[in-house]
Image (cartoon, rainbow, N blue to C red):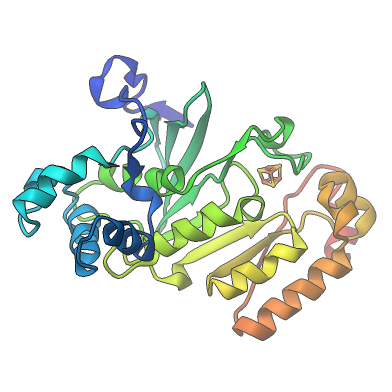
Length: 294
Ligand code: SF4
């Protein structure tokens, strides 16, 4: 059970800032290469990108004036064209078992969740990739709402950074999994870009081995997970096509055989194992015969 920890922040000025002001580029939307290109456009040296990444991700300094190894003129120029806004935290709930839920404002009355899950040797953050979802899995609340929009890179990286900033001293997010609201492979551009940002050695230095993309079974996009050299989880939830199509309508488009063929290709390319997730639904997927069939 979750209890309110730091909720209803609507009267706290820290949480009511609007998002990126018009005309400014949000820093968290940029990979290292993007930032180099951005700085090149300003006539600045490429190594400045590494310096700014280190300030923001390593030192958590977003006040440009405090970035002491940038020239005074550059420090005066940057705030006019770049913002460091994060999606505001609307609610922060903490469970007795240490699990924490964060609800983020992603504009236009929409919100998404991230969940921080502690275990013996890890601190795993489950990130959202979309507002709503078109996959319509029968066991999922998000699936009851149609896709409203895909999150941007800065909204995905922003979830991570807000949770990172709320950690207690000595804590560190060790793993991330794209298993929150939305189908991550339905938003591949922002999801894989955010992975590039978070694994950068001048960024949060997350190992690719500690990043998992969980899919309902968007077969053509599975190769993108292999190309990104991150881990794959597949939501199976049905021991044959008849049951799986009932529980997960995406199975009508990409039946189990096609899904497993794509999984085998993934394993051949990456030499990695895949995690298969299976939800027990009373009378639908929880019988002994289903276990045998799986
Ligand atoms: S893909 Fe994920 S978010 Fe979308 S409906 Fe299925 S379980 Fe829910």
